[in-house]
Length: 307
Length: 291
Image (cartoon, rainbow over all chains, first blue to last red; front, side, top):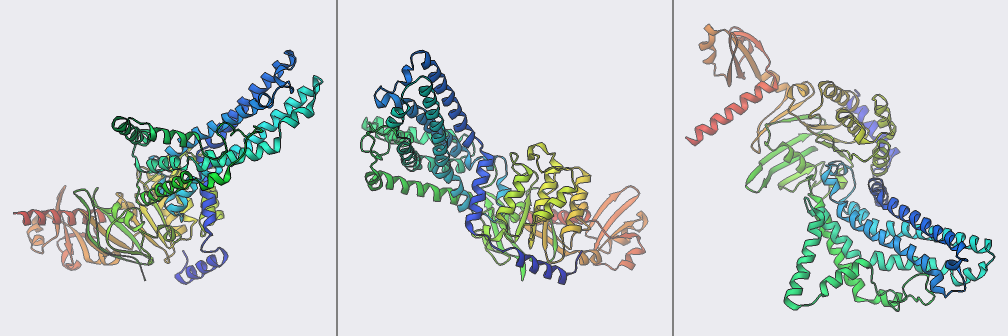
């Protein structure tokens, strides 16, 4: 055991070696890492779905060889050629929605359920940092991940098609002309961040809030109030506005494209309407509601105990 | 500067009063043991100090308000609240990475050296470890943090005696250095008895007794009295009396040791004995007041 004077000089040395305060971004970064360690479904689920989609596509393409490459016939209209790409991307976006919903429902609940909140709170990480790290999963991390996986998947699909076309003596150039890969990838990232991150954010923040508040049955607590509001509206006014509102948020029916028929990244007719989207009251209203839910979630976590 | 300073600390859960006006001052460099029956308010008091629960009254820990400044406070405070709170899905190496990532005062090499003395491997997941190993791991993480205050709330509950002994030995030998303060609650009083510098009893949300251990040892004397001298001993107003095989044991507060030596075998009481005596007095007083 050292004497007090030794101890003081030791601690002074320790402080001079290590900074007493880390930048806030560092705690945020490690909190996001922690989420990915705990919830591996965030990347495993989309990867698995992409693998299945790739498998199905190769089956279809190989089967198409015997059908005189019917399915890869580049003389078809563009939308027929691009259809598998949209379907595969759509499948991954749907996976993203499901993963986000289940992640958010559990995010602030699991740490209370397994009592580990007592460990996390013993470290110099604020409740704001923790909650922001959690909301960054459906808002930033998962969209980026989905984007990377979709581009990689579509790249492999395109190479595979090209290879088969080349092998069966058809024009590879025509396929590449009808399917502008770069344009498609740019539209994909726009689509993901507008329709599947910013637009449904109030839903995800609501789920986060419920996961931090409910002691059990987070799914019921999250859904029942929505059903109740929709039910009251239906009985009193005989309308479906609230249900429609929640549903359109969840599936990502954002006003991010100039026409609801042309919102697929591969569609040559798709034109983004970033101005309309950024100027829409729906976006900003949603962000305000999200912020309210997040502030409530942070305040709730401050004195939240294990369950 | 006082490490912990509380005045009029109150907290109730519905109609249950957990803290009923606690005044407390813990100086730096002390090892304080808080002893009390279940539901005495020990955990609530500690949780208030750590910013884990809301409270009424004044409370400063290392000069900060734990309620609103928990994250800054945790740069200088460490705590183990209950056993097995480490996330079961995590790998040991991930926990080291995380704490090293967020804690500026964490010495990873120190933690790994401590773990090297155990059978815990860095690749293991927490769920694969035994309860005792999880506690060792938690202690390794906490001891590698250069904190000024360490709070331990029943850190060894449910562990076998070997782990418990190791736990307090490591704490004293490898961690405590007189510039740090430790506050600990436990039911296994006899195991921390020799570790403490200060002692505090809580009951029903109040502090019912506090003393420095040096004072405690000089002030309280326990005498094993022969039956024929029992009346003479009782005249000296013992604070507590209990019957054992072949006589009675009387506990005295501030009575001359030599005077007592004439009555029987004299020794320093254990904390557990004093605890029973103090709480016994309390319930007698409570009954007297209600009559």
